Length: 482
Image 1: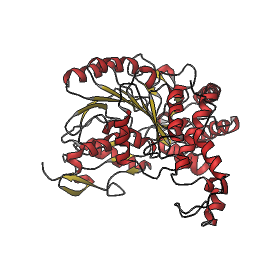
Image 2 (image 1 turned 90 degrees about the horizontal axis):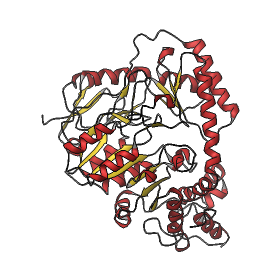
Image 3 (image 1 turned 180 degrees about the horizontal axis):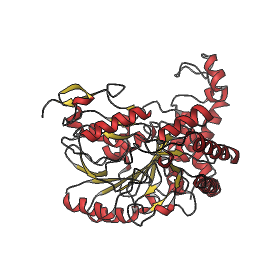
Image 4 (image 1 turned 30 degrees about the vertical axis):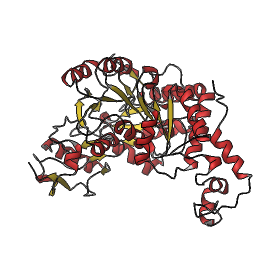
């Protein structure tokens, strides 16, 4: 057992600060002295540890000392055989999972409501997606988890599949039966990958849904900067004992920077220590905040702050009760409209709003008075803005018709057409509302009238549409081959 009170990277950086080194290396700001305006903005302590790899600080691409020790501590804390520090966000962790598990022409089973990083990975490696269309909750307009029978069917129909990817939890807090899906996949010799971006706290909180490593998954991508408290863009990639960690390191080094930020790396190290020592206490507080907020919001009328009453033992096997996901359709407002009102009129920035829901991300950094302020603002909005809900779009998940692999479509000969002329064509680019970054269209999928109407509706409601070359999604790139 390693000493979880230790933070090897932080300790090495503290030693470096007292060594009185004269820097003739990058970065060029030379511990902040060369850029006083930036130093004033970020602080001298921050700039002093924005340094380059050197022997006492190890090297992220080939760690042999303090980074290696910090990763070993993280692996132990998360119950993994190995942990990699990632500085390209959980996007880079998802990419590394997929690129190390499937190659061009090989099949990977995954739900269609994955983050864009997963489909981006298929563009890079040329693997073939086999989508398990998630069940949906029509009242909430959200996709649920992966039903066990749907996974079983996909595995039986695709005995040559090499891997399966599971979102657990989803952005809204919905969890699949991860342990049974993992066991089922392993029976077939299929590697299990988990996009656990929103599940850092599963490893440290009490009475939480099962974590990927506990469920026996082979790899998991964990956004430490979300509920774990580290700096934005820092992430962990966890591996089980059956995974060749040296091969994974090679794959990571294909896409990850060779100039890893020690600000990000040390934040992972310090945050891991904080969670290992105080995680239970931290997440009990978050659960209390969420439980209180759900009760108060549901008492307002017009909103539905949903929770573990959705659990059905299958497509909602469990629910992450730290999530404050709120449906707004009974209010007569799309979630994105409530999101905008909260920010513009009440100076409250929530995580996201989609066509039917909002998500307020709660963490140990919150205070009771801030939770109360959110509840009061929602009460005000219900009183001032409530209207007839006729005409609101009630469902968000549209089953895709896949014509080409993402890679083949992305690199195919293409033409740009006005959105209205795209019905029946095959899209060669992404269209998604961000956040949460789940594609409405991915390369290789047929553009239908329902999708065109969805894009128009989302744009009219104020959703930020990203992905296409046309910044306002008024035109789409389509396959010229047919």
